[in-house]
Image (tube, rainbow, N blue to C red):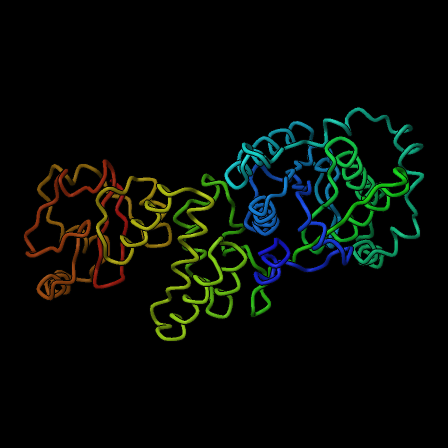
Length: 423
């Protein structure tokens, strides 16, 4: 299957600039690039779609360039943004660019016949003086054309916000990136989200004006949406990041496993490398046994493995199973805090561990039970657990052995009511 066929069946193809692009891609390897603005030191899952685009092109034998916008990140892309981005310092952009480079290395190969390359546009944009750039590059851009682009008109029509000259200049910088990569790396294709169409066209126009015989092309992918119209890529606590320090692998896994039935098959095509046959089999399984949510489980496993690796996936699976009555042993304190971050938690004086205090007395003091009789009934019915172990008698005494880790214990009352105790 050609890369265009692959992108098409996965729903990853939005627009192309030339009808002959599929044939050119079939005729031989082509160098392409996609840009990532370092607005933070981590990408979030909104960036996964263009990343997967680079992955598919490389798997088809083409040579990807991942561009980190050390220069353009100082400006901020205004495309379809309601308000102007807060400007970052050069030091912040440098830190962010380094973080993004490290993440991109997880997805594309930098060795082999069609090895990927990573570049930072500050390396060539930083050499320009303002006057030289305006004289040599700016004169090739038509203000009329730029103002007619949808991404610009939307902001210009907003009287409260408008658009600064700084933002308006962004398209010039990105356009020059395309020409620079064409000149120095024989890059003929730029890909990006559908919101990047205007910027891609600007780069093609500039290259055509300044390099008479240049042949350049553009391809965009759809912006990810949910079937209910709500925004994709955010949870109640904010962005879902690719950095495990920002979004833990457990919470990352939970985000994907909680996707709606109406979205999951589309996301399997977007964000995994499963084949048509594998996805078709999953679709049939979902139709036959929807209650098993196998598509969501597969999506969560595949994407977590892709982004964080096998070990992190297994830890996320263990943590998920623990939340639903599985074995808690082996989970460290950081993971416990992560898994039980939304359950009631209580701080307990550590001296109770050496005072021969009854577990039942403590749970009544903490109002986990309203009375000892309620607790005894729960124990008699087999519904009280400490660190995944069923409590068989109401005379259990607290000690250091009652802790799951150095400082924590987990109480479960019934099937789903968890309490995190910190000592």
